[in-house]
Image (cartoon, rainbow over all chains, first blue to last red; front, side, top):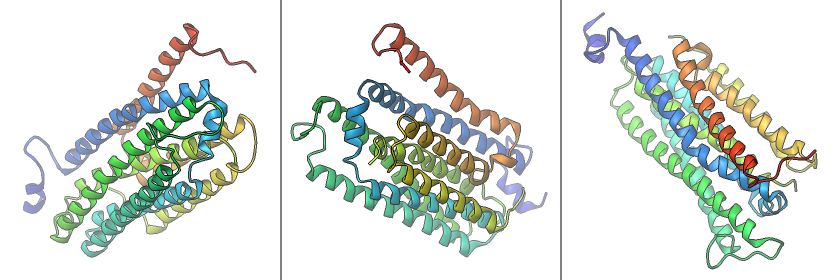
Length: 215
Length: 97
């Protein structure tokens, strides 16, 4: 092992490979806890959709399916950029790495912009649960429940996207200084796992919230 | 460490976009209960593609496969026990087909 590689390995690890494996294991365990974090909301959704299938279908028709679908495409594309960023880091390509991280962050910001626009539309349409919630079809209570879940699930997801964007920007700054392109790219890889996970959550949220009732 | 060509990732991206288009189209046809089955099936397919190729599970060690699988197993336990409780106490009706 040469001196620069040795300085990347923390004392408790035998080599860089073992250290990378440990970092990834830590992230996968964190993601397993995240699965359960979101899982509680998915479980609530399942039970209430089972109880009120017609109302959930009707409420789902009030969501913005075009915007939701576009946002899915945006996140899938951002995941592709993230995977390419990890590849650039592996290959020690500093400039492509910085640009790919910035592209990933930009798509994340774009996603949040679309989401904000959507929340605003829902708010003006009186779909925000609470005193101003208005529902002219059958079973307003169950419809309000759907929108509680809609805001809780997309809201929790949006918090995760925001954290992801901040992480991408920090990584891009560090990458610009050449931190990851001399063998120690494990941080990029681990943050990549997190970003892909956030993408996977949305992959389930989209059909559940926007397509619960066919249009 | 294996490095894949960029086409490896773009190909996966293309598959994911095709699946998204399929989900979207299915949102406009009435298949009854199969709307939900198909939508969740496609979401699972997308998850598998993302996990295998973007998250590199395809080339990772057994230990990481285990850690990734554990999340899903815990989720299934949570769903099974809770739904069994709701059904058993009659809080939700048994499904009838």
